[in-house]
Length: 306
Image 1 (cartoon, rainbow, N blue to C red):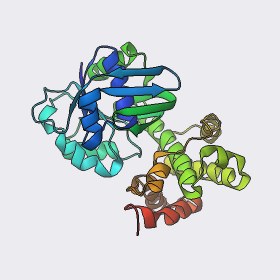
Image 2 (cartoon, helix red, strand yellow):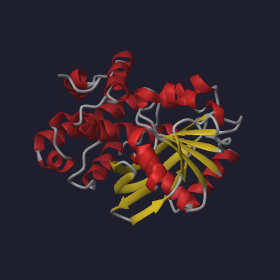
Image 3 (tube, helix red, strand yellow):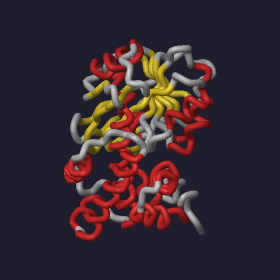
């Protein structure tokens, strides 16, 4: 398969490298110093699980002269969704799947609004991987993908993408209920991102601080309640399972939102806590902890304030 990775950061770069190493044709879309390093030195993955390896992908800034893609791994920040989707037009065929591996629960609808209904596919990347330096990605934890068509069908294009992930040795699940998976990740990332950003601490410190850990659980409960109110069939044990998952994160880890805050970059706040607050108001679901996180971080949403 020819797989285009739109957004060669921690998530896109890690999975793109795994696919390329397994023999798939992969084109990474990047920019700036990261793009220069990819072209000069290739992409190096330093994994706490798999060790270190380097691949040499095709790396581009624009897709104007790139062959048609069989699938796209769409891994940009949520605030770049519309602009990045429009950049895909040169490589799209009528059946090209655009698999969103982003944070949030409304990116698929936004992608289809730009490209036309039926291109977007929902997905969850369960992975902790970040750019450590231009051309270098450090992989800390997990590395699994859950994905599926938004209407639950098991389509030929989904089967082809499933086979590519399996050839690459990536733990993967093709699900008939991808919205449930999206909402479970959404609850999880709202809690991990919210608490590591607001406290300016690692997840290990959050776990060790009783009041912070209680608030972590409250965030999970609020977002799960939102999902159920929105019609998503989240199981009764959702919060307990996500708390257990959070207990296994390496103690020195911080969410990308917290890292962006620390480095003065624009935050994905509106796609995460902002969306939850607005949805709660619309559905009549109380979200006081989520509102508190949103209020605390909103002054920093656009990046560093001098």
